[in-house]
Image (tube, rainbow, N blue to C red):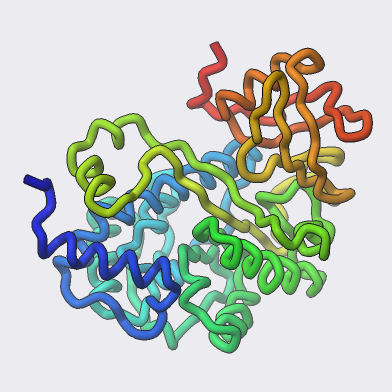
Length: 345
C-alpha cells in the first residue's frame, strides 16, 4: 500500500502536470487548504532545498539583505519566505505575502506567523504589487507569466531594494531569467548582479553559439529525504528523482545598496562558475565554465589538477573557482568557496 491515498496522488499529479507543462498560470490551481498542505509536504520541500542552496551560497559570499520589508511575490504556501526567515533569524520587519489565491495567502501567513512570531505579516492580492524598498522573493513563477505579465511584474520589481529569484532548471525558464530579467535590469544602470554570476557584464550564455546551453546548478538533497518513507513513496508513484535537484537562480540589488566592497567583478575578477555537471571521461572531466570573457568548454585532467578532479567527482561545495588555463586545459584551480556540508576527506 502506498503512503499516499489515490485521491492525494491524483491531486499531486494534476499539480505537477500543470507545473511541467507550463499551464499552471492559466487559472488559480488551489482548491482547498488540504491541497496546499499536501503540496507543502511534498513539492514545496524540494523547492525549499533549492532555496537552502541559494541562501547558503549568499552567506558564503558575505551578502546580507537590506531593509526591513520582505515581499514574497507569488507566495504559494510561503516556502520561500520561511526559508529566508529561518536563514536570517534576526529579521523582524514586515513580511508581505502576495498571491492571486486567497487560500494560498492565508496558508502562507499562518505558517509564517507560527515560525517567525517576531515579524509583522500581512497579505495582498497579486494585483496590489508593491515592492518599494523591499527585498522581494520570487519562486517558480516565470513559467506562469506571459511576456506582458512578466513586463508588468518587472516594472514593479524595479522599485525594490533587491530580489532573490529561484526557478526550475529548464532551458526556457533559465534563459528567460537571463534575457528578460538580468539583462533588462543591468542595462538600466541602477542594478548589479550578486549571483550566480562571477561578473557584471552581459551574459555570454545569450551569444548565438551558446544557444544550446542554460544556466543551472544542483542543490544538495538532505540525507534524511532518502530515509523518509513519504518521499520515497512520492518518488515511486510520481517518478520524482530524489537523487538530483536542479535549479536556476538570480540575485540582484540596487547599486546604491550594494553590500559587497568591490565595484568591478562580483568576486574580485578572474572567477569562473561551472554550469551544470561535469562530464566524466577516463582520467579527465569536461566542464562548462562561465567566465567574464565567455562560456568555455574546458578540460580537467586528473594528472594536471588531482585535487580539483577529485572535488568535481564529489560535487562538493559551490562551483566557483579561479583557474589558470592553457587553451582548453585547466592547469591549476582554486575553489573560492567550500560549503559547510562538503566532505573533503
